[in-house]
Image 1 (cartoon, helix red, strand yellow):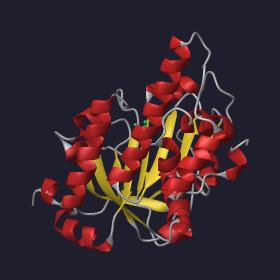
Image 2 (spheres, rainbow, N blue to C red):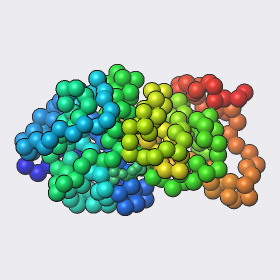
Image 3 (tube, protein in one colour):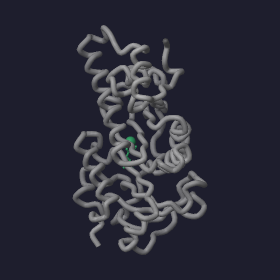
Image 4 (spheres, helix red, strand yellow):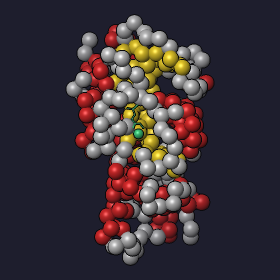
Length: 275
Ligand code: 13P
Ligand code: ZN
């Protein structure tokens, strides 16, 4: 059976390639996980191989027991995913304790799920709970403009959210809840996973200072679109600041943000508005 004929895998592979084309995935940078629906697991089941060993993650989530995820491989390159899915991505099953994974397909020749799997896993857990099970995608990328912003703005959710909302009129509509900010931390472990998932209880995107961005969504389009919108707003912010010699002559005022929210039927995070 050709796994690229399974629709969910087609969507997953397309998103990896789209991220690569955007320039957000130098070398092995970034990772993507998808929580599979039961019918998608069944469509994939003929491809499953003899399961690998259970591997503990160092984190645990009650509400993800027995779930199946598609994940990118640690150290594998987004650039290569489309041409060779079996070496660069895989399907893992979570055990009945919600604390270990085992490989059922892909990640060939000794690959493992992304080193950020603990962060993805806890983010899936809190986003699943926060969205009544709707959320399925967690996406981490290294978009350059957003990372550059973490060198010039205070590392607070309010500062980042306001700068991004003001950088493009559609932003408050796309992420009315704003973005969280995680201070610089060592990547790849349970500590940064806990810090990120704490923010993801409230936000559907979290900035990692001097590193990148985590986005979530119910489907590939929404999660990719959120990453794209935030990174484009960051680009506009930096272009305007650079062109203006470090000064903005004008921006979208709070009353205008409120007007957008009213007309588009979204609720902005009130504590981030100043007037
Ligand atoms: P992986 O290759 O383990 O997915 O790590 C890439 C990365 O972006 C770490 O934050
Ligand atoms: Zn990273």
